[in-house]
Length: 317
Image 1 (cartoon, helix red, strand yellow):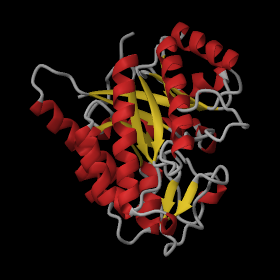
Image 2 (spheres, rainbow, N blue to C red; image 1 turned 180 degrees about the vertical axis):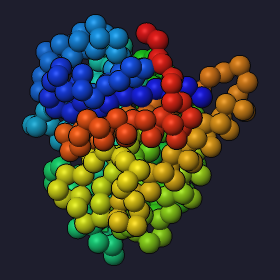
Image 3 (cartoon, helix red, strand yellow; image 1 turned 135 degrees about the vertical axis):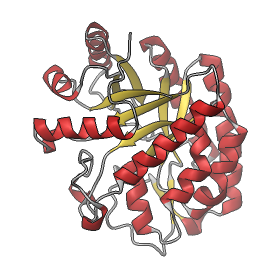
């Protein structure tokens, strides 16, 4: 399997920061929530001139006035809200095509469904309305919405020629036990992004959720990974700490070593079962590199590459 390594660029285009956070062999930058479309074009030009490419995480440019920023409400129980959100995703997908991005990441479900029996106090939410209580909907409605939305996204992805990648948000048991494995299988040209920090928080919020069992159920569809970690009880401080082998599960950090081992197994399995085809996995360091020293940042990158079995891989433009 070909592993493409990226660093996340969120809100600010800072060339000096990008130079610090990228390494030889990195595929590119995953970009989200920039200040303006002009900044997006300047960043794209900078990336290509630096031998880097871009992937896009919805939205490319922030719009505080929009109900669909920072997330498109594509799973809203309100059909008109859902349709406007899908139109926003289509607009973004065509922009991704123009800028040369091979994928567009979109969170699902949004709004997220919160089981009101659980304690969500360690989670951060960007704005009011991005979650709904589970007692305001039901599994049948969530299945109906997803059965409507995911095929539309799949068809749109095929039409535009840019892969839409579904990134799991907070998951209700309806989603992680049944809905995601079933509907990803029915829409195989959609990608799926796992988020290491969110899996960690979910596992310690919901006693019924097993990150390992969920990953095994969706392993065939994983195309993207967001890597970051957080210590339990500290997520309200911002999260997105770089992953390091010294940050252990015993101290409340995510079990990143276990996740990397699982991904290495999946990569090996996919390579063995697709002879003549080189499967791809986009691995984005979705972290705040300013939280660590240059030495620790080097340790982070080396550990991840080594754990995935690609210590010396170089991506060619």
